[in-house]
Image 1: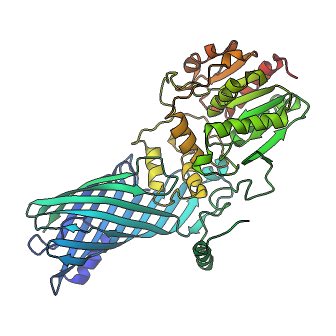
Image 2: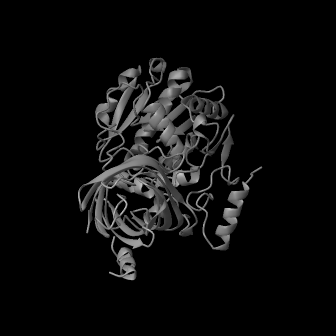
Length: 219
Length: 325
């Protein structure tokens, strides 16, 4: 598969979750799924990633991932992310992978329909031996623009003059956590990740935590 | 004088250039408060400014209205003075409607200023401002009924009467019959609310109030015949006062309730599960003289909104039986 085809596939399919650094031994293609407390009480993700092995033992991982909240799911609430991951630093088994994703999300309920555009910067410095890994996880998810369109009931019962349209930076999510996982079999990888997350100084509606488990299949 | 930090000023300038709206700007996602809009009717208290309206003749007996939440506003209670069979309760009584500290269109504060002591002080000032040297009638719905209980326990001698519409617990250990607020973490309304935080962070009052307002029309209110309107939810009040200082604390506003000489009227909705007639039957014995009137086909908020036409005559009958000055 050419690099261009991989890029197109990564863009149209949904990336594999964060796992072991790719290697030619375990395969360049990764299909994965995640489930956990991820932006809501229960969310499920499906992803695909393609590793491009570059000269000088460097690797570029193109990944995309589609997420749905699973508490009475509907197709109005969703998140799609696509981006690239490289090792900013690699010294033996220590590596510092950095991933930058474009993030598009949707929200739909009786009050508002929303479409958000943003980016997520994820870094996971840690220890990456061949069959397992343990790493810190830091991420900054920034919503750069959000289109809001409010329903008639919201205008009637809450705020008649609410402004529809594109808003500038409206939201962010900071995460400080850890990830750990391994490849019990050559082509199958399991991992968990979790930690503290922050949405704003008045955000006390739920415990400020995220916890996600996932599995990848490499081929 | 309002000062805007330079980085924020630069951001606002950039947004204006590309035509984007500012989520923190009052008027965009949420209405302005009395600090942002000087034309809103307001009352200056010792350390806060509250959105407040009065209806009726100031020489008539004074009724101070306390909305629910905490964090809601008085908009949904205004049906109490709408004419029923051609008569308004404002024809014979002087009504004081106000948004409590940090709620509705009143001034916003940091969490440190949102204390039960500050709330009691605010109500004392409102009562003294409109009923100086006189007794007062309190009318409170839900949290507003608890708020009335807090005041009555501190100043039973000031009470000419009280209407408590499905108040929450007046003492921390009064058993609840069912969870008042459905905090099922897998409920769709909560899932929607949590998902919305990715779009709009609760970083300032405007955005926090907006995100919390999205809950108003969700299924948590499905038992209501008709959604009750609100201007603007005070998210910080809901989070700090309700979740931290009431739900998570051992409060007791009952020791002196027996000193209230006037009869106290409890109003309940026949469809209410959590704070209905059976629950309020545990609270009426706290007063020397109290009774319950149940409104048919009404839920918790219906009794003051969707079914207000049934509640208003009950309130009128009660007020006419009091000795008011």
